[in-house]
Image 1 (cartoon, helix red, strand yellow):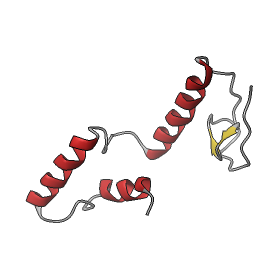
Image 2 (tube, rainbow, N blue to C red):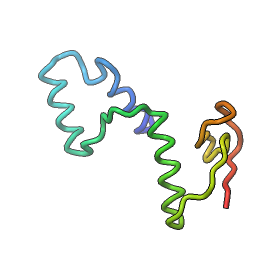
Image 3 (cartoon, rainbow, N blue to C red):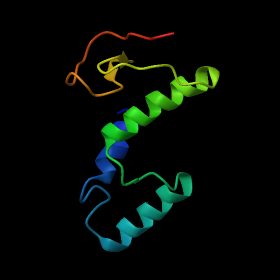
Length: 91
């Protein structure tokens, strides 16, 4: 199972178990690894953030991104609706 899928499962209500003591222990263990393991932002927001951060890391500037442009199959900017089309990178 991909780690992202597993973490998404753990973030769900009851994902860490039913025993409150065990839930607290597991949450503390995950927080030791990454304090943001259970961040309040939606998964969709996180994906968009990661795409834009990756684009910024490429050369230190953020290119002009038109609505509907996709990166790794994810729409990076909403505009004309959500699309899942092949990757298109702008330079």
